[in-house]
Length: 228
Image (tube, rainbow, N blue to C red; front, side, top):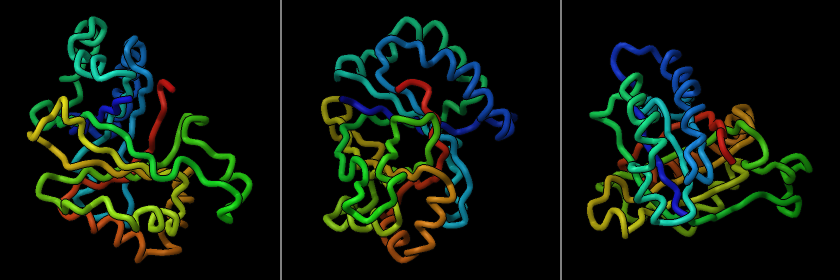
């Protein structure tokens, strides 16, 4: 599968509340009906004291999944997208600063099991089962650390209580050598409190995991699933 990310900046003159509400509806309601989409998630940026002032560079991340490279390539020409979605984007998106990336997913931790010492509820939790989750997203810029994806990543994610951990790598057939980002890191928690408790339990692990990427876009988001 191909996972597509769009890093969405808010247009001037639209408030944060207006942006997030408009993105949910009508934009998200229309977007979930594009037939080639296999999943569609809106990751709405939320503030955390564990990240710096640049965490709000983008108001949200659109995450879409396609079955094939062909579907991902053709997304911009899909009739429903051209008729409904594309004309609606200027109403809330600063298109001059909009960025995007097609990737292939490397799953480090698909989910946590009771054998790893977590609670029964945490072992049951899966990001696909519920409409809302908390997600930490990090997009490593071209001049970021080339060794951002290390062997210690799994352990660092576990130390901060993440229940799922994924790395994404740019799709070479689409991007070639012209990369907007080296890659993407994604970690999930069931709730915001779970994220905050996990990070407080091992702040050093969190700081190390986040800082090892070097120059990167890092944000916390409420991930809302519009299409599984």
